[in-house]
Image 1 (spheres, rainbow, N blue to C red):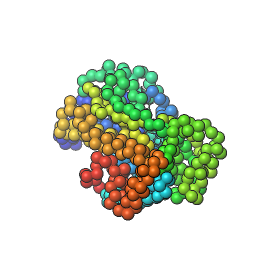
Image 2: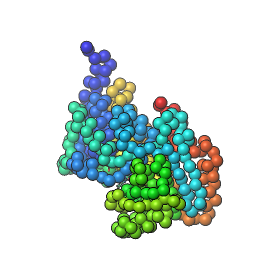
Image 3: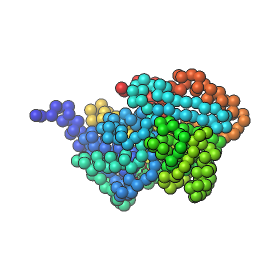
Length: 402
Ligand SMILES: Cc1cc2nc3c(=O)[nH]c(=O)nc-3n(C[C@H](O)[C@H](O)[C@H](O)COP(=O)(O)OP(=O)(O)OC[C@H]3O[C@@H](n4cnc5c(N)ncnc54)[C@H](O)[C@@H]3O)c2cc1C
């Protein structure tokens, strides 16, 4: 049977283009898979071996925009059993002594059928599935444990080859290509650790706004939780270096009533936080994807979801390029433009949340109480906030795919 002319044409168009992706973290690996599924030829390079790529101990909050992407790439069903859904989100302002709740009914109708506000997914099962699918693909050349300086990829750039920097926040490619980049270091850092808790609701995620910084408690299944605890960086480092019993007793004074930490499940880690953005996500044939192009505060669990919306945006454009709807040279410019509203929206709103809630300023207290009162009182405000978190601020006014 001969292929339909349109399909044959798009396969030919795809073969003419090559993508060299540097960085096989969750963003680069997912993008490589998406491009390979569209028929493009992809080189995926990382300086780490597969073993080290799997070894990170962290868990990601997955929102509905990421659910849709994983579904489109045929990964959702395979990951479903590895994820822990949360059906309510408790938001506490610990200084203004006010609490608000979000439930599944506060989601937009197109998101409600999945019966979860979001999911928590551990790094290892995600990366093992991605690497397994990448290894099985004829379109992907995997170059792991490859210490060739990434900058070679730039100088080897030939026509019809896009170079993708998915090499994380310290991106060598971005710096070598001198892509303009704005960065502001928060005076907060972040401590992450997995732990066992008693008294917590198994399907609830907690976000506690404290004067030193927000703390998220995310369910990993049964009595296991991931803690993402923001505070001044030195304090995070001191806490991470303290003994497990000291850390647990410090934590137990801060958790909601009745919730107690009983055991740490991995080594606590502390890392600095920053707000960063490359105002243009391209230069020549170089495109920045994921944390190579932006970084935000972990409040609201936006980080990886924002990176994956870069992947969605780029895959929509490469699909349009295959269909002949957009010209090859305009890909990079269109990609930068299509990501602008979402990136600015998330970076500004997470920054505002930090400025508004991470303090004891008595002048702000009435406004903080009022905002939580309004969240409790008006379901359209809850729906709007949850939609911005789940689908991205750029999609607030757009209909969602079913
Ligand atoms: C210490 C730490 C803890 C975190 N904990 C959490 C958490 O608990 N929950 C959460 O949701 N988010 C967490 N984050 C944020 C989350 O990890 C990022 O949002 C996510 O990893 C971004 O994915 P990425 O693929 O864009 O970048 P990265 O995951 O950073 O991937 C970049 C990849 O590029 C490779 N690379 C870099 N330079 C080169 C080079 N020159 N040549 C070849 N390869 C290169 C690296 O080896 C890496 O594999 C944490 C971040 C850090 C730093």
